[in-house]
Length: 274
Picture 1: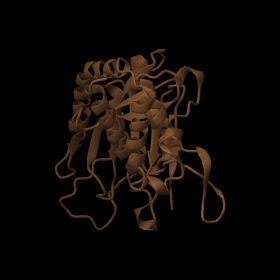
Picture 2: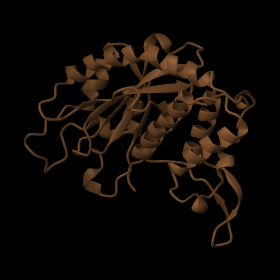
Picture 3: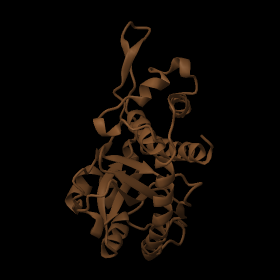
Picture 4: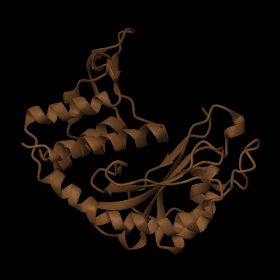
């Protein structure tokens, strides 16, 4: 694999162009990958980043996709998370973010989603498209200012996000429901749970004292962090006789899809009766 990198920004400091270039060179492509259709309109991600900065959206997290072929390197999918300038130094438990993905190899359109950053554990969540519509832009005929102007639609979703989080907090999960939630969450990564390296109960492991509560919001965040970051080991043994460990998710697509489905799962539980 070529060119996989990620920066997790715990201190909420805006990332410089130098840092972005180091971690995700594909952001700075000056032309699309060769061989694409003439209808493909090249809009440099750098223009989007500059325009969003002018609108007080600052980049705080970046990563780019692994690629197997040399010709795609420097043009592959990249993901940037932005936060409002006025929220950079606040001590809120969570902040809304703008999650932007793009590529210069025709691998994906410009896509803008609602994100949530939870300070306690550094979780970068992605809200389900079914709850808050993703904003998609095709490269054909695209202008940079269209993406920048659409960022204000993300701000319209913020009060709705706060309401959903409040609903998650108000939904207590007894142990049996928490295990059911973890089982369905684990199934998002492993179709056959018997072949999973851990049991659903292990996803409920508490990494810090502050996450011991039993409300849906806390359980959801515990499960999300454990599923994405991995590192959990039980007594399940591989065919080679080694103790199996849940691996961290690395790919952009796998993390975004998992996050969206987890949010959808939490929405379903929040809307159900105790």
